[in-house]
Amino acid sequence: MNRRIKATLALALLSPTLSWAACDVQSGPRTTALVELYTSEGCSSCPPADKRLSQFPSRDYGLAQAVPISLHVDYWDDLGWKEPFAQAQFSERQSWLVHANGHKTVFTPHFFVAGTEVRDWRANLGDELKRVNAQAAGADIHLRSEATGPGAFVVSASASAPVSADPVALFIALTEDKLMSSVSAGENRGVTLSHDHVVRQWIGPIALRAGRADVRQAISPRANWNPANLGIVGFVQDMKTGRVLQAVAASQCVRS
Image (cartoon, rainbow, N blue to C red; front, side, top):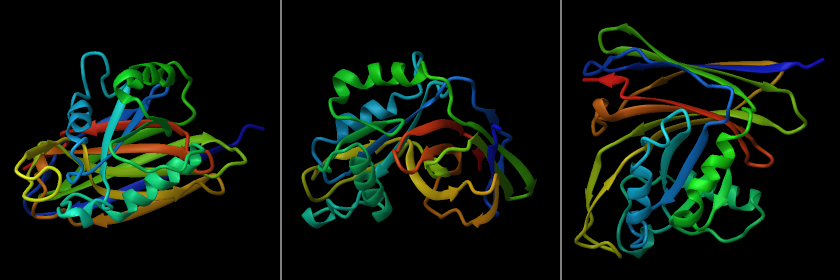
């Protein structure tokens, strides 16, 4: 008997300065590639990779083909520049993905597509996206938002995947585009950097157990977030192999 695992996440966000524009997106029968970039403003070789990630979505790769997220790591902070968008958990996640891919070296910039490491991203990123997009989806995800009143909104995600021997989890990320930073120290001293798809809030892993999981979580948007540039990403991942079974995104749902 083919059992299914289902998980539901509902996030209530309250702020007097925000209103919510409805978004509702359902994943398709083919796999949408989660494109993860591990980067840092303290790394002089990272800006070209940041620029490449900012090119998504594109004419060739819309959100139905590629869901981009930029995860800023904190291990460059000791070299002179305190990374404003870095989170220690992203450094930990990068290390976990490296080991899941059978490697040991952690570096920036570092791309992963659907959980698979792409070392030569200039040459191989497009081929890897095509490989993932050609696969049947390993999970179904429904990502949606709904206004609940003035300055309040709810984001929910539901995911289902066939039961397997490996643990499977749902993740939700809140991202922000059009971020700017004037770097005054480190390898990029004197350079103004721009970023898109930067992960601001990370939720998960939410384990899929006993066929169903239900989570409701309140989030307080920070004063330095621009509501007009926020987006939401959901993905389902095999927690043993690192393989991302499906991803989905909704952008520009928040309006000030």
